[in-house]
Length: 169
Image 1: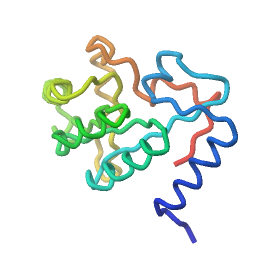
Image 2 (image 1 turned 180 degrees about the vertical axis):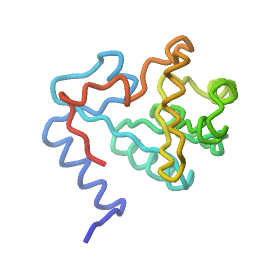
Image 3 (image 1 turned 60 degrees about the horizontal axis):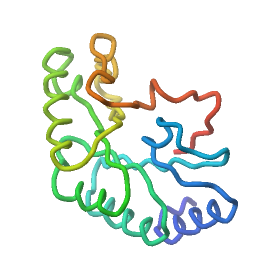
């Protein structure tokens, strides 16, 4: 039986904190601001902004910072609320899927969405939203374009050495 309640999540966070782990955002990880014993908590906001906001409030009360990645349809006031609680906000992109493989249109849409998000909060990192039923993979856009030229410092598929990182989902 899997327990995905806030109560169990608090217990996990408390156990990690008690074990001496430092909580860093993904942007901080990319910038090298971390200790030897650290945790990056990443939340992809795929379905419920309300749940994400509740979780961000709980983390804030526990003095834990996390990274929240918002899809295009969720860019709005909730982004500002979550950032104001001390969390990182990034973009959860899926443009190559949305634009049915048209790389140029996908990139233009990506830039528009990152700019819209940056009008609300500082955005330094991105992560791809998977679409297993699509024949398109949005991270393939980076074979043609360079997200770092947009001032973005990290995308986990490219900027994490998974040999040195233990990943749980």
